[in-house]
Amino acid sequence: MHFKLLAVLGSFVGLLILDLGSAAAQAYPNKPVRIITGTAGGAVDFTARIVAQGISAPLGQPVLVENRGGGGGAVAIGSVARSTPDGYTLLAYSSAVWILPLLKDNTGWDPFKNFEPITIADKTPNIVVVHPSVPVNSIKQLIALAKSRPGALNYASVGVGSGAHLSTELFKSMANVNIVHVPYKGTAPGLTDLISGQVQLMFAIAGIAMPHVKSGRLRALAVTSAQQSALAPDLPTVSASGLPGYESTQMFGIYAPASTPASIISRLNQDIVKTLSTADAKSKLLSIGLEVVGSSPEESTAIIKANMAKMGKVIRDVGIRAD
Image (cartoon, rainbow, N blue to C red; front, side):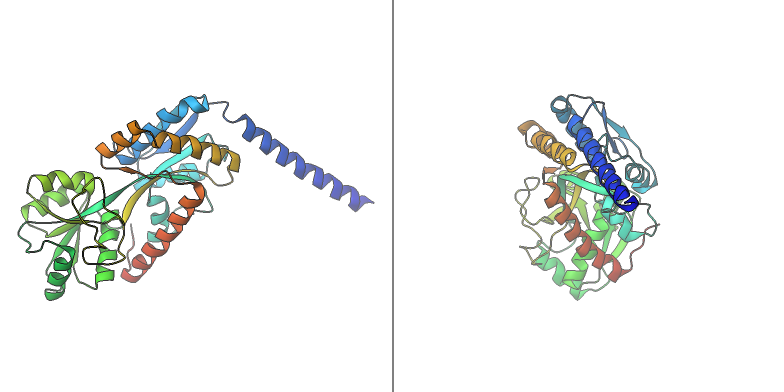
């Protein structure tokens, strides 16, 4: 009898917890929502502010963007990983959310144990650019040149483990070529040395590379996305111009802490995707080199898992580790 009573009480408590969670989700939101992101002024900060402005009215609450730079993303990402899963603290960040755990031990979070993806908000391809002195006009010719002169070509990146670094290492692996990595502390010094001919090529973010292509200081060969990009509509893809199956883009997502109620995730996804789908948001994002994605939570999870598998293999094979 004693055990039966305990079982009944346990069931009652469990149902009560579920009811309370459901009630909290139904009442959501009843206070301001915060979107935590990294340093102010970058692509993900711009994305976060467009999202915040767009979802405030349908949520009926202020949506505030809070910048937390530092630690190569660890400060912003880690703080949300430890937040209460109630839909009031969200994360807007780049693919560092799932790339950093592949590059270093003990980041303090796991992309699936600590986060629920709400949506991949937008993305940007890299543009394969070379110094005008490099005698190639296509990816096929670049691969042929690199194979004929192993170790003679250098490529710039914005640092070990960066999107540009991993995109180029994926290219090297798939093309079976030897091109030497020269890491820089930021995009500007890398581009400066590329323009001056100190390095020969770079997989550079589209919005930053294209002005130099249009001025004639660099030559563009291809975009790294699966399809041609509105950011460089005249360029073929890497896959179509010499390396079939290649794809690499930098993505920016919105996340909630793990265990956030599914109804809240669904509500946020609908409001965020609706915001991103407006002509105004698409135009503003395209102006800084970003293309809207607006995926569902399920699609976002599949995208992240596929990219972790692909880049994880490159990271292991090359032995890339971040400080």
